Image (cartoon, rainbow, N blue to C red):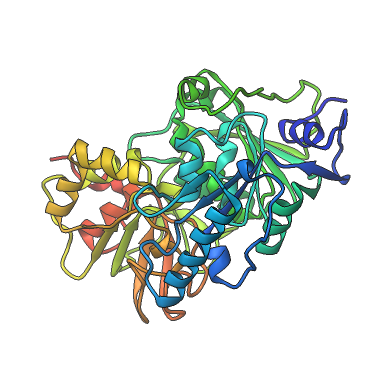
Length: 416
């Protein structure tokens, strides 16, 4: 019996010929990624690490520091990086959301195993890489020992066919999947099918990122020509792609016609089995609209937002906040003129940060306010007050809503 992509990666990193669902295996990680927030919450700084050259430290959540405790943590992190001689450090000015940094700088590669304390680490599954979030103490333990354990999960496969409609994003695809099929806790998710060739690397990152919100262990995409082209000149080292065997076993195989997906929204406070087409939710008034995060803060997301708002104005009473996923995305969007278009419409553009997504800074929502956001999570209090409300949607839906004042299907906004 053959193996899936994730099973092959886990077997290779455990030094085994094969693994099967239910087995517990000890694996050596290729990369251990640390973010500033893990130390801000009180996680102890490691006094030594197994291999400094396989550690990556990214300042991304509280950037620039938005409280004294964040600034003090930054001092300790910089001291740790210098003391342990960690060469892969992304500080203020060269920073970005960790998952975007891994993508841009060629760290996440086919066949690799990557761990990080951030819950949306699965974003790197877009690169044919097995990427998994760990608890903060577990992350420090892997940094010190070089190894960690996993229980091999059964896999659900999604066969994607066709091509997305205009102004429909893979965020909509995910929300359709989450609404239709619900929770996938203790499962890996494999994306397959001819439709993948029609998805950009960024669109794949969005899908992989969002799988956290249905509890998936490892989301993963195959390595195809489009990914090879993306990695050309970017990959930091040689890599070995993995593909599932023809006789690999899946718990379920589900087919999605991308061309049939419409703009979707996740309703309040949860995602699984709690999503609906935008056209079916009625007029939901909003106070804030946010484009950004590891889910949808890439250049193509900002371009989509700029295309919709060009020549139009954000409606009074709504705050439109746009946050690029990295400094590199910031510069690219600046050069392309997207920020000028967005600011002229009434949007606020911030530096790259995770701040608005987790309610830390740059877009905290107050009591009684409602936010539509392209970020990945919507539980009570996620973006600020526990008395606020959060709807998840694609960047196109977010900016369309900013133009009308209520959650709006972006296909209903006319092009100038």
